[in-house]
Image (tube, rainbow, N blue to C red):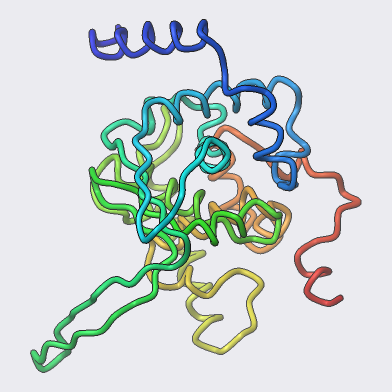
Length: 270
């Protein structure tokens, strides 16, 4: 049985859809140059537009660093954000409200103690962040660079963190669906993460971003990017991980993409 709060949300969303989806002109112009959406079926496109309408109306978009927000910016971010939950439910994005958008990368101060207890401080140039129960922060320049089927997608990366954090910290172990085995998930992801770290340590020129080796949470987020952007690569490199991601997201992107499309490996060789 649904809780009263979820029933209220569903009624509100039905009324929102009755008032109308994101206008077609805005929808088409916002996504026209993004091949990641090109091979969605008609039904998938309509469902994505509905979810994106919820996202635009329920999330608060805040500009930062001189960023100018308009409907096309909001729509592009919303569509990329909702692709991972295309076959899930919008309630997977509950518990947070705000999307902060900078024009480009933004500076974050960092600090850490070394092994002998000395504090070190530095600054990082960041393209995206997700705070537990807090905002998602994005670089618009990097949003524009996402969705081109090249393996990079800052929005999907941060949404993967948000899904991961529904049960605590971003540790690469999100809430699994009924019927998914926790031990299988742990074993498969641990083995793949260990293998990938060994390849990075050996200075292998991996087609998957070496940032995935930073930790289990980053491995899950980066592999989620590649799962939607270049699914054939994930299926080739880590087939068991691909299968689990397909179960978790309820999608099989490799089936969508025509076999005639060049792979990321082929693109890198041209």
